[in-house]
Amino acid sequence: MRRWALARLRTIFGIAIAATAIHAAGSSMAADVELGRYLSSECTTCHGAAKTDSTIPPIHGLDRGHFIEVLKAYRAKTLPNEAMRSVAARLQDDDIAALAAYFAAARPR
Ligand code: HEC
Image 1 (cartoon, rainbow, N blue to C red):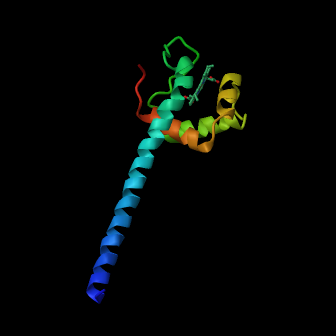
Image 2: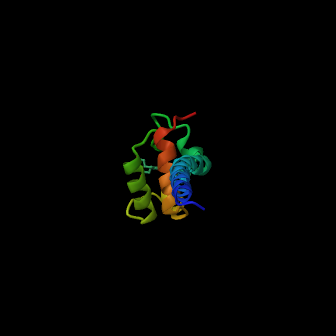
Image 3: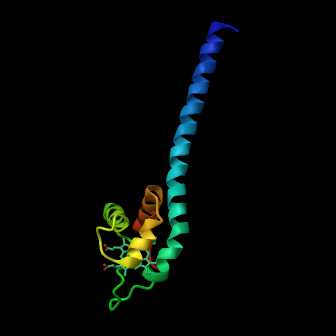
């Protein structure tokens, strides 16, 4: 193979790898929200129809950072609430991040 052809092949290959990487980053964001949506059904049995007279706070549209902090605090049992502690105990860091991403953009139905 001629030298120029090899160089060209390398360039094309490099672009393909970069494009794949960008695509993967994009779809992993989307996958997070999808995972969050999937996990959220357990949460909305309590948090779905939050009314003003309810003791269950609304979590739709909650700030992502706050959401993650609070869920980890329930998991570490530094926040008091048995329901939330047992829910959070079953969540991995990735699940919490996915839920935070989903709820930050979600509206209650
Ligand atoms: C059994 C009912 C119940 C379920 C199921 C439940 N929660 Fe909760 N959650 C509560 C209650 C009650 C509180 C308020 C606790 C308090 O005031 O101490 C709360 C508080 C929270 C808060 C704190 C809100 C704030 O403004 O700081 C977040 C975030 C939260 N829940 C997220 C979730 C997520 C995510 C799920 C699903 C994985 C979930 N909850 C499932 C009852 C529930």
